[in-house]
Amino acid sequence: MSGINDFIDNEVKSNPVVLFMKGTPDFPQCGFSGQVVQILNYLGVDYKGHNVLASDDLRQGIKDYSQWPTVPQLYVKGEFVGGCDIIREMFQAGELQQLFTEKGVPVQGRAEA
Image (tube, rainbow, N blue to C red):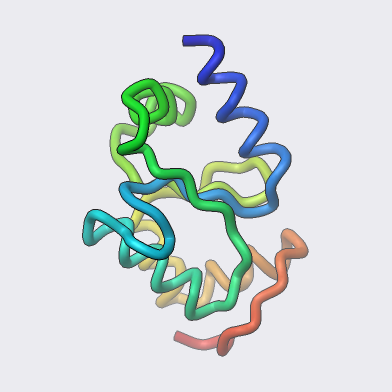
C-alpha cells in the first residue's frame, strides 16, 4: 500500500488544489462530490480531480492517508481541508474563499456566498 500512499502524497504536495472524488470534475458520480465540484467551479478555482472509483487502492488509500472515512476529500497546498459538509459550510461562511486567498490560490468567483 506504500505505492499508493506515495502517489497520493506526491499529488497532494505537487498540485495547489486536489480533489479526491467519486467520478470526475466533468462527471461527478455522487451528490457529495458534485457539490464540491460546483463550489470549486463557482469560485473559478483551478484544481486536479482524482476518481477514486477507478482504483480500489486509491479509494482505500486516500481514506488511510487522511485518516478521514469518506470521499470527497479536498486538499489545498498539501493540507487536508475536509469533505463535502465542511467545504459547503466553509464556502457559505466565506471561509473557503479566504483559505484559497491566504494560500495564494486564485479565486475568480464572487467573494460572498
